[in-house]
Structure formats: structure tokens, C-alpha cells
Image 1 (spheres, rainbow, N blue to C red):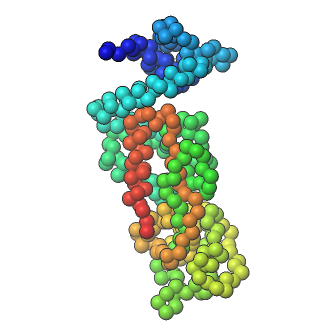
Image 2 (cartoon, rainbow, N blue to C red):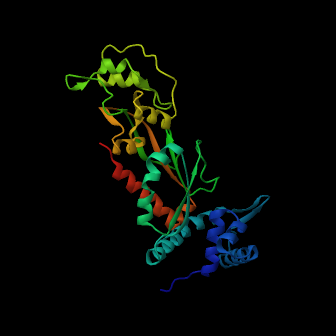
Length: 295
């Protein structure tokens, strides 16, 4: 039995206009005029004998029937796009990403060579900002942020934050071949602005008589790490941020004790996620996080 289908151009115009909630935005995405989108939609409505959009002061909005129709046909367009991409050239083009300076310097940037090797045609543009950005509102494709708890719904955990104790080689006091917790507690100790857990860490490490700490003013993560490298004290730090120093033997982990506290979360712009290059970068980030897998 032959399929009964409306004109593909009309379906495409409706799907994009319904997904973006705007005839103007649909015209821009499809590189046609506003009147062309309107003509296709009105023709589709006439063919189906239903109203798919209603006019509002702010523009157009889907009717209940239009919303139901969009829900049914959008996955079909997604599937066509995916099947076409699978047969086409490798992912390419610009991908924009917002993240924080510390994870960018210590974890992301050292790995960008691997991204270029896997996807040489992809250009990743980084935007570094301290605050949590709304990637939908600011038109970023991907967001990577540290969150302590209760992440937004669209965020997925990429790197759990394992807070461990680090110091320059030879700094940590030893007693009988093991870490001398009592001597370590006397300091000097470095305090990171996020991970202020020295009393909790010593308790978890098994120190019975925990002293009253007189800890210094907290430092930003990069300064705290560099202070530890310079031999100014031991530091509690997210293991993801100490990779370069550990690999260079500038720092060493002085105890297996760790505290789990939040993590780095990945978010994908719902519209950008349809693009092959954005999905490729997201998958690369996930693969890199699995390869990190610190014991």
C-alpha cells in the first residue's frame, strides 16, 4: 500500500517552525523567506484540514493538534538526519563550549590534541567563565561545570570529584614507613576555597585526637595546587585537577583516603545536539572521562 505523505518541503517547514517556535527562525535555519515558511505551513494545514499554529501577540504558537503532530514527525526527521550523516563526510565545523578556567587548564586543554587527532575537521571554541551559564540562552553548544549538588535537569555527571591529599615529593612526614597523621596535622596545610575538609579528612584517615586547626585563608584552586608544588604544605584537592602535576612528579598522593564532593557536569544544548559535530565532541568528552578513571 503506497504511503500517503504531504509534500516534504511543507513537512520540513512545519517541523522546524514548530521546533523553534518561530516562522522567522525557521526561515533562517532553512535559508528561505518568512513568506515561504508561511506558505508551506498554510498549505499543509489546508491539506490536513487542521490548524497547526495560532497567532499570538508575540508571534505564533502550536495548537494542541499541531503539538501532537510535531511530536510524531520530529523523530522521523531526526532519524533521516542521522542516517544521512552516517553516509556523509566526518563531523566538521565549529562547536562552542563554556567551562571554568581550572578544569579547562588542568583537564580539558591537555587533552585537546586527542580531540584534534580524532576529529581534525572540528573547531572547538572555548569560553571560560566562573559562573554557571545557561547554554540555551547564551547559544553555547556544550557546557562543562563543577556542581556540588542538585544539578540542573539537563546536566549529566562527567567527572566525579574525588578530594584527596597531595604534597610535593618528600614533604609528607613519615613514621614507621607510613604517613604520620599527627605530624601532618601540625601543618603547614593549604586550604582550597572549595574543598575545606581537613578536619573531616583527618577523621576519615583515622586520627583520633584531632587538634584545633588554625588554617590559613583559602586559596583558589590553581594557587593552592602551585603552593603545594612549591613545598608550602599539603593540600586537599580534586584528583581531576592534579593530573598534570602527578604526571610530572611535582605532586604525590600522600594517602588513599578520599572524600566525594560534587563533580563536573556536562550539558548539551537541545538544539545544537542535533548536529553531528556537537554529538562527536560530547562523545569524545565521555570517552576521555572514562579513560581518566582514577582508582
